[in-house]
Length: 210
Ligand SMILES: Nc1ncnc2c1ncn2[C@@H]1O[C@H](COP(=O)(O)OP(=O)(O)OP(=O)(O)O)[C@@H](O)[C@H]1O
Ligand SMILES: [Mg+2]
Image (cartoon, rainbow, N blue to C red):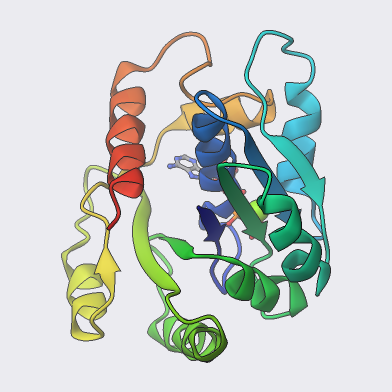
């Protein structure tokens, strides 16, 4: 399965989710992580991860523009799962990620949510779907804190018939610590049981996506 973790906005958790998903998949089968963002945050995470010899590693490649589609699709044939991390702006990387994927995972926060940006993203998604039939998308609410509610966001997306994952990812500092070490929250010490449980449920929801 090929997943693209994308949105038209920076800092929403694309790299966090893409690296966690790719590492999760790598625990059970060969997994490919395509870094299609010129900032190369996923590739940097993968480089730090090399220092942890015992950990399962997704194969990581950096691809740009049309290569995300051409090379990405052909490389993906050798892996059970592929995850593409594309930059948070409209460009060839994002557009080709939408063409290369089977499924699109869109992380989104509550604070700073901008409906117009979302509608622009849907235009891109719908255009990609004209060429890449069968492309599906789901939103993951990320970085939610205990005081805030995602009800309004869910209503907004519901009105547009957008599927939102039931599981949300809470704001937790362990994500920043783990990513900075080339790890995932499952691997980071001290262990954060609630975060691990939450992500486990999200992985399940993603892999049970029908
Ligand atoms: N659930 C979370 N809790 C706490 N911090 C988070 C969470 N998700 C992401 N972050 C942090 O938010 C920042 C942005 O996340 P990330 O780099 O994954 O976003 P991005 O969408 O890939 O950004 P960019 O568009 O710049 O590539 C990072 O510092 C990351 O550690
Ligand atoms: Mg990123």
